[in-house]
Amino acid sequence: MRAVVFTGAGANEIVSFEERADPSPTGGELLVQVRYAALNGADLAQRAGRYPAPAGSPQDIPGIEVAGVVIARGETARGFEIGDRVFGIVGGGGLADRVVVHERHVVAVPAALEDAGAAAVPEVFITAHDAIASLAGLRPGELLVVTGANGGVGTAAIQIGVVSGARVLATVRSVDVRRDVAALGAEVIGQSDLVERAQQLGGADVVIELVGAPNLESDFGALATKGRIVIVGTGAGVDAEISLRTLMGKRARMIGTGLRHRPLEEKALAVQLFGREVVPHLATRRIVPLVDRVFPAEEAHAAFDRMEGPGKLGKVLLDFGE
Image 1: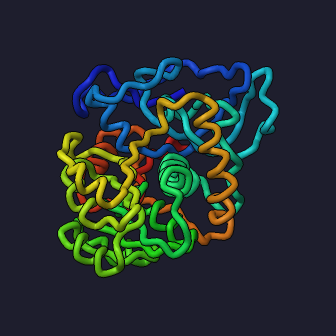
Image 2: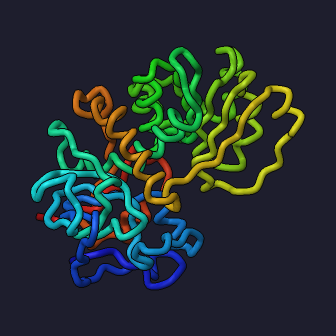
């Protein structure tokens, strides 16, 4: 197989593109042939040495999701046939053209999705759905705030909020992509305007925090009584002070989340709920994945540079070719 490999910790100097032996599925695992693979913020953190893969996953091949065609099965895998298209999440090894994944961590790709679109879906939509529906319990008519909303999880969260019947307020730093984000169904503003606008709308019932510590004060300022903040991303900082008096006064909840290090069955539950509650909307195109840029897999350095740069809209993909 061909794979993106990290040879240590650092920046692009530790990223290489290598030939490796094909992995073999065992037990309930599937071997998936990949055309397109998506980058995530977790890959940047792993490259820097801050986010190692969980035990049992490849440690030097990044990538936390997979989309492609089943080409082999472990001896007890029965959920899919050879030739089926699937997508889902992995602990590591996703930036390769052959990926092993447990069959309970994938669901079937709807026919309406082409390969590139399918590759842009699993990690961000599973993460967003788990945060919004399972953890925050968003209800129709509530106000959902999504911060840093132009990335993969942000654009997924907006669309899940809209199909859930919520009102959606999104913060986006880059003025250039605000119109495109608004087209997904959100009112789009700058982060500095969040508290005032959210309070004008009655306060945020749910805040999906994708940026990190610098936003926390305004998140609490925007929150309605009994509001919920779910911390999904911390790229801009991990340490912040919070007012316990504000937390108590608003009877608020702050929830941290992450998928990668969950036990097998907890991951499986998140994936299967995504399959039941989000995939039907992908099949009808009421929800659409967004692809920012596609790079040849051999140009992983450029893809990582794009991930780190401003103004993205959706996912950055690697193309492994036919």
